[in-house]
Image 1 (spheres, one colour):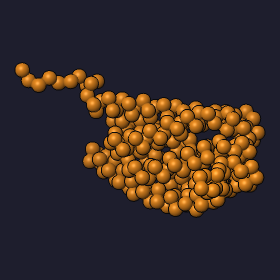
Image 2 (tube, one colour):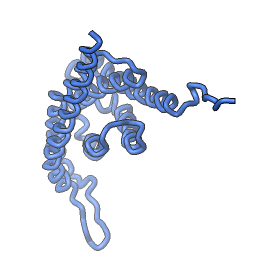
Image 3 (cartoon, helix red, strand yellow):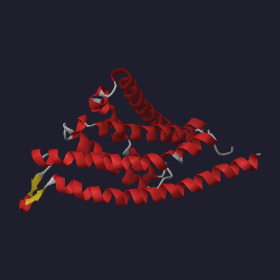
Image 4 (tube, one colour):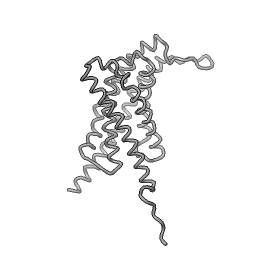
Length: 233
């Protein structure tokens, strides 16, 4: 008797693809809901909707960003082919801004820049997760590939600027209320506004590194996709 062949649904590659598809689908649905909710609210209430954006979609935003930390595990165990450090920088960037700055300081949540920042984040993620979801099942559209590899070139720097402005607007509140400033053992204190100012400088250094990585990745992906397309013609 020859070696037994496992059914397709029991093969590791199949299970990995199913898991990734479900993960990308959940993220796509979450970010699509956030963007749709913000759009409907803006057309219904105008600029007033921007003030309470965080109260309307903050919970779903936090859930989506928390789940996205799984991507570091995906890369580490090899089920995603991205590089670990650039993705770590991107996720850390968002976690610090969302949880460390916006969530922890209620006065910041009402700023217009929070609404703008959420729009940028969700635009990028909606396109990225759509592309990733279809890639897992072997479906590729040249237009979607080009969009996913090009949209970030404009939106990502705007994200970093919005993040920096969010930090800048939050500093007076952290200085006044002392939020997240703690006393450590051996009489060492952490003054959170100083931490944010230091991070503000690091934010632009990280942007340069991430942008360079994404641009190199973009060239490789587009060259591979469009070269395959030309061969088929």
